[in-house]
Amino acid sequence: MKILAIGDLVGEVGVKKVKACLSSLKEKENIDFTIVNAENSADGMGITEKIFNELLNLGVNTITMGNHTWGKKDIFKFIGNKHLLVPANYNRNVPGNRYGIYECKGKRIAVVNLIGRVDVNILSENPFMAIDDVLQKIKNEADIIIVDFHAEATAEKIAMGYYLDGRVNAVFGTHTHVQTADEQILEKGTAYITDIGMTGAKKSVIGMNVDASIKRFTTTLPERYKAAEGEAILNGCIIEINDDNCRSINITRVRL
Image (cartoon, rainbow, N blue to C red; front, side, top):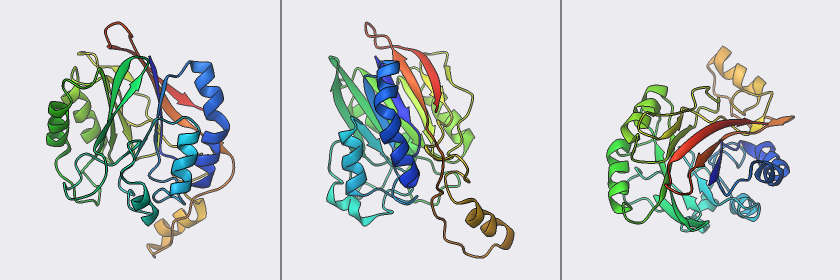
């Protein structure tokens, strides 16, 4: 089993890159299941119904979100769709699926979305306690468990990797948009990487327009962020799992 996780789609450039590359990438790497973080896909903030449907039509199995989940009110039209996940540690009164379980090649794949609390301006519950609750609920329902931890602090992500080592198949980080070079199989068998990077404009500040970003830092005046344009990159990772015992055997970075 090969599972592809694609890092934060940023704006139209990121969506177009996935459209252009996903089919050939899946064929080349023999991908069975695809996860895409799309919380920045609509102009850098949120997701629209149009983009959601486009991703599903490309063969994406699960779409995860993060701190910009509510960036576009369009999301309430499809918030209950089983292919869309919001962080499991959102307040219990917030709508949306905290996890999803999907059939693939005779296996049940559970995908869980979490959001960090360190330097993330979102009121959320403790992600460590939230994942414990989810794992308890699905302990007899899934053969493979994948976690997208959408967090700012590398320390929080690394801690989550060790916390879940041996309890899930993979923990990959999203949100910082910069791919890290620490992919590994932890000692108890969990595939881990701190951040899988972003899919968007190559010449950008984490996917956003360079000039607007510099103005914010040099003047400290409010400046509306806008998604950058131009040549695109696609970042992500491939998690390989043994079909016989459902153990993770490899994790590889992807950068196109």
